[in-house]
Amino acid sequence: MSRRPDALLDLVQRFFQAYLRGVRGASEHTIRAYRDALTLFFRFLARHRHRGVAALTLDDIRAEAVLAFLAQLESERGNTTVTRNCRLAALRSFVQHLLREDVTRAGQYGRILAITAKRATRRAGTYLEPAEARALLAAVDCHAPQGARDRALLLFLYNTGARVSEALAVRPRALRLDRPRQVRLIGKGSKERCCPLWPETAAALRPLLRPDAIDDPVFRNAQGAPLTRDGVAYLLTKYARRAAKTLPTLSARRVTPHVLRRSCAVALLQAGVDVSVIRDYLGHASIATTSRYLTVNLQMKRAALEAFWKRAGLTQGPPQRWHPTPKLLAFLEAL
Image (cartoon, rainbow, N blue to C red):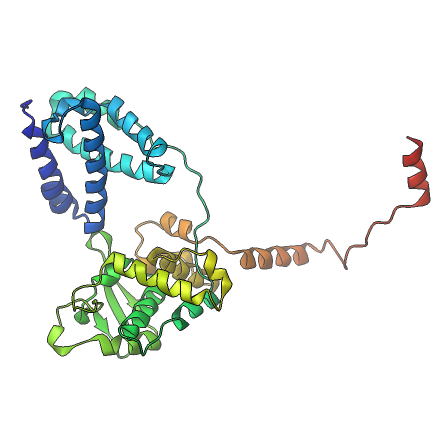
């Protein structure tokens, strides 16, 4: 393959347009994540090669550069190990594309693909207890401008456990607000699934539907344009702060759309729903992914421990407190 600088540009364009969109059918969220990772990498590479991004060539993409870039993400940008691994996954996907298109540099690309993800401590996922979710919903003033929309949005996210991208893509034709109430969601890989709707959710959504906007998104901003991910994040932060005034536990929570998705999953688990059903409800391809969402809370752990303790029959009553005897004290004083 040619060593001219624009060969890299050609391959980048084909990676996003032909491969990610055409072959994989990647979501816009995935494409944005890959775009951001490659943008950061090429800017880092240009600084260390002391030339502009436009002057970079395929020979510059080497394992040493990738390792230095990953180290810079953690040391200078303060990225977590999880973020570092996500950037690496994007680079690996791009390098696999380069390998398919440019076999003359197979050894160079193979050394990059040999770089493994870094072990990260898996923290327990944040979620809302039902009382916290109710407080969040109660914080919405339905009489305020856009208040009805905001309550419908929060109800929809908590009810369905939908990804924020799935919720923002919902059109009126995907909704059935009469029995059986349900919504048709299009998830990752264009996989379709149906989720039931609570009567309250259906009632909250009904005023948002306009006969003259059947092909427009259900959730729109004040100007009538589609609501954005940043807009949803802003609304959740606003209502979480407002709800924290009545429920202080929310002040320590960072409520995001994904927190509501996880809260839905945990609520289903606490209700006794089988994990395989929750997997289909959330639209996961693998049950292993669902299992990572279902971080059992302390109340469930405590109930399980008490049931186990009772079943084991280890105690018949409250334990007796220990009191030192005179002989014991005398022994200790004689040491």
